[in-house]
Image (tube, rainbow, N blue to C red; front, side, top):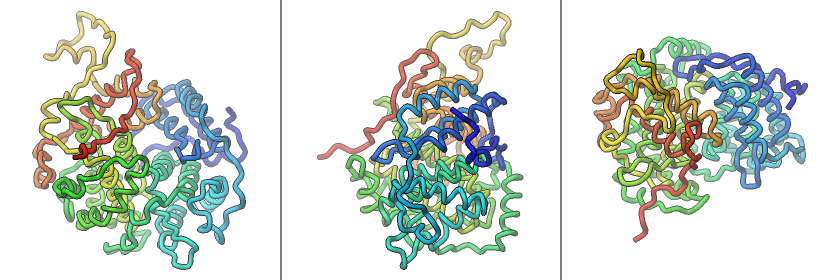
Length: 503
């Protein structure tokens, strides 16, 4: 594995620190060794492997695991070991049939054979224009989404949010860690992604309703405010506009039509969006984002973070069955942590397009998996806010402190063993999920139940939600996937869904 390929040095610099307190902080453990290992993996992956590892379009996650490991403080040897495991089944990079230029940019959208050509195209664009300008021009601009003169509808925002939001995740790593190579790869991945269902994001999403200042003025104001605002302030909660996302979910839960979706295999999401997207859009029509208002942006970030954590965690819990760690809902959590990084780069109108499009996709996946019920009160009554590791435990010295709960002598911080087992687990998604949940615990861990912004929604039990949600969900996930560091067998993500039996 070489780290000195001539085309990559400027694409994969040392990752930068977070731009905002809403973006995940780096864990202790980062070192010269781990950083060198990360850069070597990212550069080697960029040159050697394709973004898809099979003909079905399954995604290359090498960079995702490597960056998550680095951010969680894992040693360089673990980053290398993860790369060795993940590279064992990848598809080598290959030449595209022809070069991509501005002239033929729209001609080959959705064709995976052109990933290499789009990669070269976006490398030049990002080097010349920077990440923000490239994303605006090639993801959010109207002409790359709606162009009557094109041979086919370009639909770049749909492609960007397609494939279980993998292009958004990939590019999000680039923005969060200031890695231009990840931005390049994410843009190219979006370009060759299937449009799946063009009804996902309708054309009227591109009519922005907010009152904008000049771009420079607004960017400075938004950036400054995001750097200063304290996460989960009551101020942000009190500045909500429109219908709360929990009310949107409550109304969907009461709609009998949206509970009839059955498992259609790999086409479940497409089927759901083709048949029910218009109804979902109607339910969320009053959920708006003022991209010029930092308090409203932060409030909507909170809503999306809580929403997807609830859909995955509480939606997967049942008092009579093992935790259903749904593979698809898990991606809603891992993708949501990148939204603050996008905010730092996007224009106000693009923030609204992204947030509303992302909400539509999240709700679509939830419905397509069977729309699991959300038994919030029972969840809190039956799960623990201090999950314990399995296996052998240390024997504390007689002089250790003696809290009321003796298990807290051995496990004073329940997050630490969860993170430790996640970075040695064979599954590459687990550390990404636990990193996201841990981040939300740092942002929202002090939240008390009964706050009026949740209690005032139509979602039954929402007043019970408090800051322990994230450790409860992380603990359930650790048990379901197996605490391999402590000797448990590795489990797998669930794919059976939550479908109602056919009558």
